[in-house]
Figure 1 (cartoon, rainbow, N blue to C red):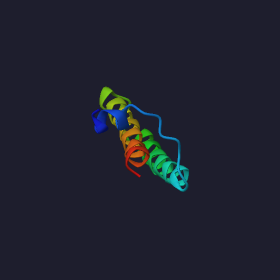
Figure 2 (cartoon, helix red, strand yellow):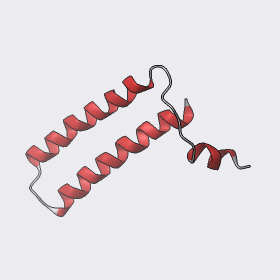
Figure 3 (cartoon, rainbow, N blue to C red):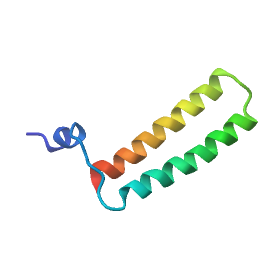
Length: 68
């Protein structure tokens, strides 16, 4: 079987220390989200920026879950 497919489509229970990493990433992203909310005018571009920030957090956390 393809190891990459198996890894990417499997549940990864948090290991010791990972939850703290996930939380740290989310907290920093939340800080940036509040800054964007404060300084950017309401617009499609702002919405895209916030969506991509959420995507970044998701992929950063996936990198920890899948590769540690």
